[in-house]
Image 1 (tube, rainbow, N blue to C red):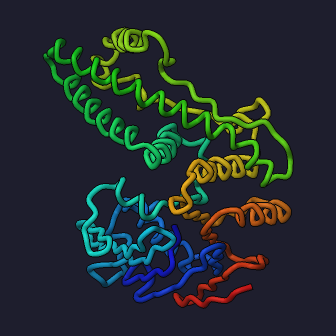
Image 2 (cartoon, one colour):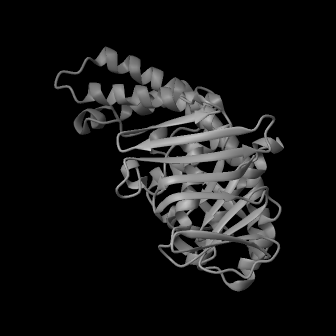
Image 3 (cartoon, rainbow, N blue to C red):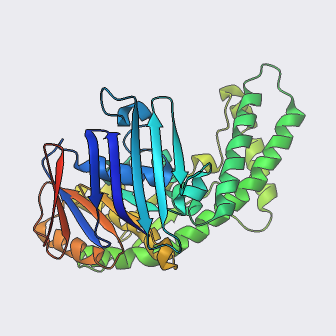
Length: 357
């Protein structure tokens, strides 16, 4: 899939913008606060119906306007799609070829975006929820079963936590919900392990492509209960061992919603021993790996890399650019570039001018 054309109306600092993009490498350059990131933010919004920078729709609407619009023509699909996001301070509406889209899974089939943003460099030093979010979104785009299991798990978890907040707890009801939670968690853990194993086959190759050095690299994931024989019994017993603490704290203290993982490079935890540059490369490699797990060309995701070059030396910047040419459509934002064989978009005073190199 590729974004052939993007239109913005009253989105962020753009009152009226239309851009046609290259099907391969697109580099958006300009000084800070000129609106480079706003363009890729709009592209990403069409993938998940949410911004990677804010949870408030009102933040996306140009000051003085009541509504904003993002419109894109998506090609390299069996049937071209015209997708429009209409935003107000109170909500949003996504339309594809004239029909409303109501499910996130449906939207990501048309515009699948892999995003790297500057704060991602801290991913392995951030809270576990940040790392789980990346994993959950990535797997959900490839597995409807996983997405449905996550939704069901979240529903059951909220119900269990609600029970735990009562002064007089119905223990039979709590036990029933716990058993249901255990059954769903087995599916989630098995899907996570399968996906991480596939990523681990790719990580050393991607890191080598960017760094030019061969390194051992893998994601180390520790499920709260190892899968296998008698998983249901072992997981249920684990919940029962924590039940007094759960009642005291009025929340569910164990489960797949509290799991975490590490990036191990050359037998060392990158969050502890890695430099800022090494952490950045580790996260870039992790973020790019899902691209290679999708076989169908028309389903290959669009790559969006916001301010990705900072903290990388010139050699690694060049290696990364060279590696990115193996992908389909790529968007990079930067304050400057020496790249060749790319479409360059210069942003200045809210005006975007295109030049090819």
